[in-house]
Image (cartoon, rainbow, N blue to C red; front, side, top):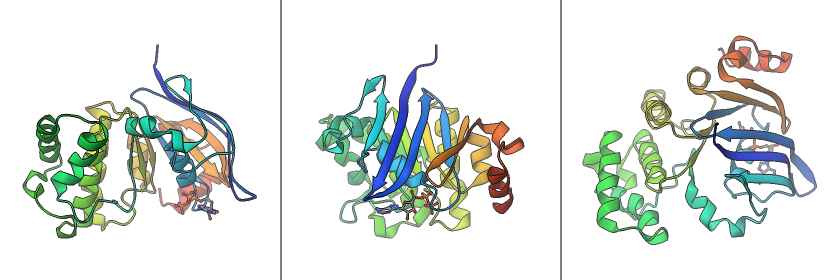
Length: 246
Ligand SMILES: Nc1ncnc2c1ncn2[C@@H]1O[C@H](COP(=O)(O)OP(=O)(O)OP(=O)(O)O)[C@@H](O)[C@H]1O
């Protein structure tokens, strides 16, 4: 039996009086990759940020491992440690070295043994080919390198679910490939459970087990990955794929 990691039921999200998400329902099992696709402003970032407790939600339910999550994100400290998130903007601490950026939360928040975390951090840095940058500061790194560090920093927390919000959107094209390769390896080798917002359609087509296609804050299609790209069910999704030059 597939193990369900996250389930969302009838989620509505408002910014003031304006409704940004309408009756969102989906679930993700262990090891699965869900990609959120849709035009600009369709609510992809809002949804992924709500799943990480960065945005409060008005009604609906979120379950993590079958347990209902309190809608007030202030109560999410424990949960956030299990959900890793990587943003478009890296958000590394500028005054800390690469290694200290990675160690901070596992040691200070999770209270894990520093030497053990450091050993693991260096192995992860090896994996993203940045071990020789462990003592560098973020300002000394390229955008692609910063993003690989941001991924390592999230992984060092041992998350059960990783959320990626347009992590290659501000990178030069030649940097994009290296970052996407790491995410693909996380799926293929580590069977990491992931929810990914991306505008990289070829990447999405390769990695997605399930596609949620959003428009105007609603899920218009929920389709197995390959099927979405081969045979989108709605005219809107077909138009979208054509506009993305897919
Ligand atoms: N903090 C906010 N306050 C008010 N409205 C917001 C806020 N954040 C997003 N919105 C609005 O919510 C809608 C969905 O935005 P969101 O960023 O989730 O879309 P998106 O699909 O991720 O877009 P993109 O692909 O351009 O990043 C948009 O109309 C946006 O203007």
